[in-house]
Image (cartoon, rainbow, N blue to C red):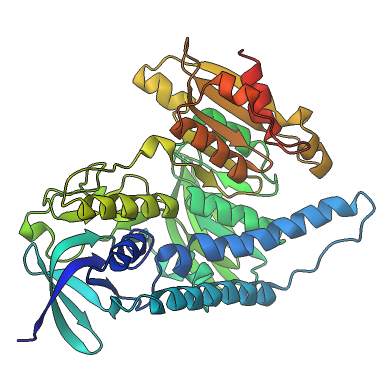
Length: 463
């Protein structure tokens, strides 16, 4: 039997839900080990998600904007060098891996072990890696094992790429397809559809539900869809029947409602139907509570086993990198306090962006949720049609919608569709977290000519 290493903290995972806590506790002089099968400090965001996808997305956005500017007298269309775009994406990922390695090297008390973790008991974890088996006994454990891709099971689904094939380091897809069919209309599918369309690919998107971005605010989704490139063919209420390989690519058979089977032909296909939490082996056998959403944890990130915390995608509370970072710090603060709850995660103040072209974003309570929960609200609205920055960029669709509590006019949440949405939602989220009111927002002099002016202008309509 291998020796047992005594630790203060072990993290299952080395991404955003793990390393902020690991760094904080290691700097406090505690003995810390991170375990991750990738053997590098990063989660799925860097490996195959938000960072590489946005590297491609920004190149696509630049081309789309340049094409628009060409009609205003600037040089014409930019040719698409997709291998060059992939090379840029890869270089960003490599740069960040190197950066993380340098950060780790500055903390000699922190160790990263490559391998898969398995629980033996509530304090003991076995790690199986290339060098064999190691055992660790930890006073506290953070499970930050993330999520993995869900692949649908239809005949011929093996012909389809997934997000890993497109966005991972040294990806499978290295040439831009002339045509692409995407199965799944969530944020990954829709983002990918808009970026490839901006790069010149003919795109068809198949969604089984009545709308893309299922579960998101209907008014926001409707406003966004009206601004998407009309060249993207979106089919809703569509069930996939089968896919078959052809000389030029593949065919996908589908059925809309009870209608007859139809066929779409494309050079490549991609599935993007969601992700599932990755629960470490043995966690349930030691008494850990798990549902279909993942490991059950409260807002202190504590699980049903008091010294074990669950952070990031694996707990299903807010599956976003920045939420994972905040949860990691919440867990660390509570561990340093001896297991007492001195910090808690606030899911109502986490901004979310769909990085389509254009973007849509929201934070806090949005109209659909308010109506569902019976929460009264008053709306304030600013349309980008009257915004100077949107006019400068030729992107005057969409706008800012803010929800306030009647009487106090405390900000409850908001949505942004269109120009700079990903940036604007952060300011709105900070105001939600700070319990600011319409009067507070109305008095803040946001810069001109920037779209953030619209936040104060919307608030001034109520005070």
